[in-house]
Image (cartoon, rainbow, N blue to C red; front, side, top):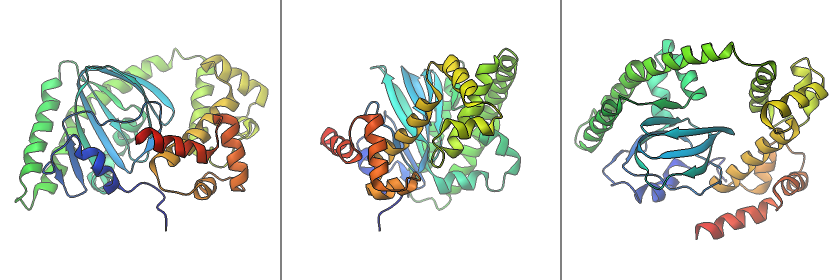
Length: 302
């Protein structure tokens, strides 16, 4: 039976190119000294959380369709099951990366109920500015590396969990508290159209697999479809209909690229009544059929 998402182990071939085999603990944690290569403008999904420490360079990317630009020194936290897209990056990137399985990250917070707001805020705000704090994050990576390399230690996984949780409690928590204050200050300056956009995107993230009509979102927000469409267009330069299409096709592309699901399975996962309707929708928006898109991916990777 085909898997719904690419198995973590299937990413080892890519990770092995930039990491030694002793830089991991089973399938729970994986350290990478250099950048993990991904295809430009090609959305993908993996079932891991990735923390990337940027020592030099910059990157322009999207997480779940939200666009970001990050410049070193900084850390980016890409959460489990997110759709990741690299738009552009500098040639001089220097990074340190920690890849963590879902079971590892779940175990970090399973008994720490008081950090769930922090966990959510990290997901909503994935970039941490490290100006003046570079040495602390490099030290964390070095300590984690020392733990991972102690292959004979029976407690290295537990030690890695405590070290990572300490990072979230101390430095990361402090930085995100600062980010929350900045966000609160900016919130008072937001225009109504920006608030509508944020509410629309939140609803879209929750419902795009089932609802693809502007009217549904307008009704949920107690607005007319015309008013909603106008506000979204003014706020972003992109219509509400186009945003819906982007979410559906980006998810489709990510599944075609990074999973072994059949086109029928992807169609079902996205709530289409038939594979034929899914194919017509995808081709209308993307310009090629799902099958052709997947073939282009394979040719591009060979």
